[in-house]
Length: 113
Length: 114
Image 1 (tube, rainbow over the protein chains, first blue to last red):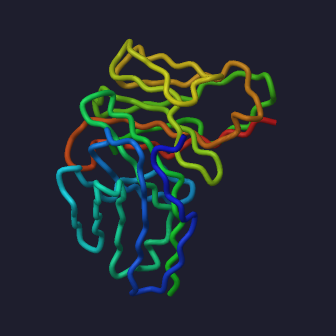
Image 2: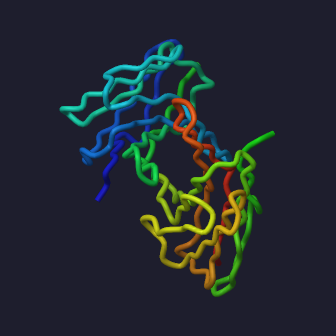
Image 3: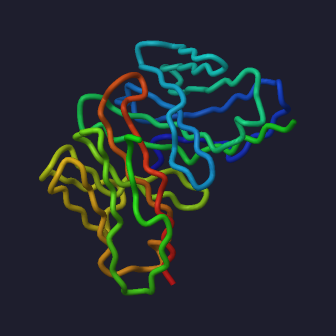
């Protein structure tokens, strides 16, 4: 049973436009959420995170929104750049234990010039 | 550079062979993890360790074993390789520093079992 779901396997956007990647979770014990970016033949790298006590976190072109009641989070990239083309993984964790991340299946973002 | 080092980067095994995937970190992190990523799937946790001498099963531990004799090293052992273990394996460590939750991933080991 998937606890973290990314229902869009792929997304294609034009350079300069907004990219919106979505993630849903089922486990109400999750209290911290992260987005990772992965290029081929490399390990995932951290992008941005949000605690369950917040509903928004910004870092430059990247913003993560959290809707706890809907158990939904989204990553907004504005403006999108060709270098943003990668697979994006949503991950969730319950803090205070073994800190195990639970990952979604990922969304492949392609930003076209 | 500090980080998580995985060796080898690529390996082809025959069914029934054994091998050890190596993972080392130099950040003095207590928490370490092994994940596997199958095509079109997310990362699934195989085993994890919260400190030297302590290991526990993750979501998909069957066919694997681990040990954690030092803080730095967390090897993953495949005893009897099966085609279902064809995957990309990622090791990670966690130091719980800063907003990135402290997770650092290695660059992965691509394993093919034939």
